[in-house]
Length: 106
Image 1 (spheres, rainbow, N blue to C red):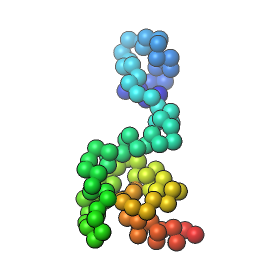
Image 2 (cartoon, helix red, strand yellow):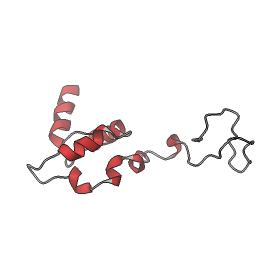
Image 3 (tube, rainbow, N blue to C red):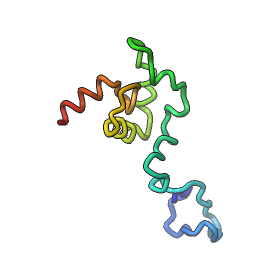
Image 4 (cartoon, rainbow, N blue to C red):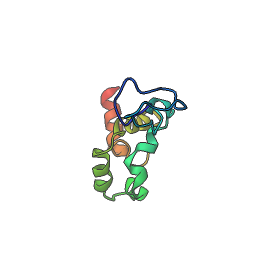
C-alpha cells in the first residue's frame, strides 16, 4: 500500500487506526491495480485524446511532449508493442517508430 509517510511501523491493515503522527493510506499499491492499472496514471488520460491519434500527416509533437513527462511511458510502450497497436502515439512513439523498434529488436 502507498503511504503518505514512509514509515515501516505503519499498519498494513487499513481497519486498524494508525499510530499518532502517521497518515492513513489513501491508495492501493501500484502492483494491486491490475495489469492495465497503469492507464489510470497515464498523462494522456488527462489530456485531449485527439492529440494521440492525429490525422495522417498530422503533427505528433504535442502528444510526444506529454509522453516525455509520463510516469508510465514504459508500460504504455510495452503494451503497444505486445498488442501490435497500429494507430496513435503509445509510449512516446508513433506506429512507424514502433515498427522500426520491433525490427531492430527481432
